[in-house]
Length: 147
Image: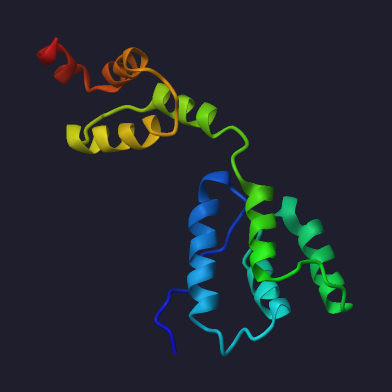
């Protein structure tokens, strides 16, 4: 028996898609004896997708699988389609939005910089713009001390 953790329920939030998919893959592939067919794997995943806005599509997929219809070539195809449905359509725009609102607050400056770098790496902004965003998010006391 695998020691992988049971995935957390997923509500379709874009930012949680990658971690949800990763936890599913680890869990399902860690339990190949339990999930022998693609249908069992897909049904398991569908059982963890929650929320009102996803119930119609989820219920339709469950009914089609129960009726013996093949919706996906295999489990990998299902995962690809699920990621496509919940992915961020504008990751650069999302990252820029996060940079605009990112604040150091009371956290250590190295923690703030790590967060900043993670978001900055998703953009194609130049150094000048990035420096301005970085300065705007610094703790005001630290900013005054530096500048």
